[in-house]
Length: 453
Image (cartoon, rainbow, N blue to C red; front, side, top):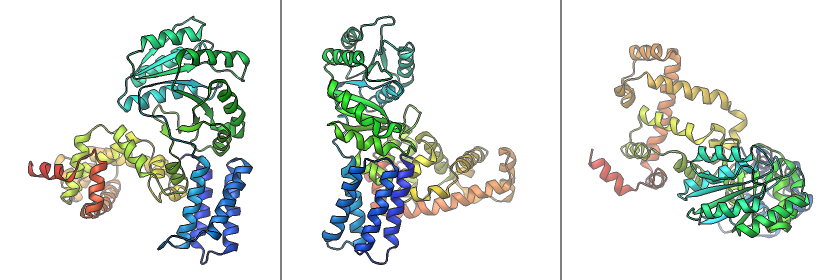
């Protein structure tokens, strides 16, 4: 999970608030002290910490709650608002044709992030071209080509050429019909004069709409001088923070770049090519506070799951009050495509707080066993699990190489999931929302599908 340590501390603050019998001056002061401690441990700038907690204290003590809202909910909302204000510095990258120039020092994850960004825009339906303008690191162009092949986008580079600006000029011409052109530039171990001169020349030739600085979030508040120097050189418009999965220093990087006019546009949250998240301040803070991010969950599903027919069939079954083992199998397969169980739980409201109680590795292995068991069932058994009695269970266990206890555990899990899904199917408001999420299918379309069976 992103900034796991900070998220756990912040959820602790809200837990204390929820258990309080009365919200008075003393309670608010104690909460602000806990909030200060959580932010400082995450390496957030001291000045910003004091500003945030002073705002929380002043609003909590002087601002009356809205009609119908409890004092606890009121203070929770204030904490949420002030944390959002801390990290909110503008919108992300626009979904429009553009040239994006990537800058940063060595070791920040710039080339890998370039590949991730190419995948992001490609999945949004844009044609993408990558230009390899790192003329100092020998393996840079090869790495970029490998990433381009992996995500299915073209890469332009000139092995042996040392004039980065000339490469970019010819690359722009080669990709003049591409909607998105992303330029991977050279890095250095430090902000040397020749690096600054080179990226200035590239920016002059490329005329990029976005100049994106890639920063390793683990450097903490040291990110501030880097951001300011690159901003002074080329006018950085956006920042991508890498290695945000679990780092305790991300708060420092986030607060440090507030010194520039740049805004955070993406977070790198893992080593996989798809582990890049568009930054949204409200959604980011919502996840940290354990409120989940259903929008991100739906977006992730739409990007990673391409079997729309199967999604719609699950929806049809739910409309009929049915939930089969086939549906359960599909859901488990979908989860595997969407990422780790830990990541998915962080997107579901209230589930983040359960993190310490869940053995993710064991649970992930158990889901794998369940899929093997279902592979040993007949189509009839998966459609009508009620027929699974002792003899069938024994046969399935033998076929899957597991015990009958494992098969019964699967059936127990299925029965619990079935009850939950059927209750959701009876809730018209929830049903309509799920239909929209599951591939954009609406109620009228569902009725047509049902009538055609």
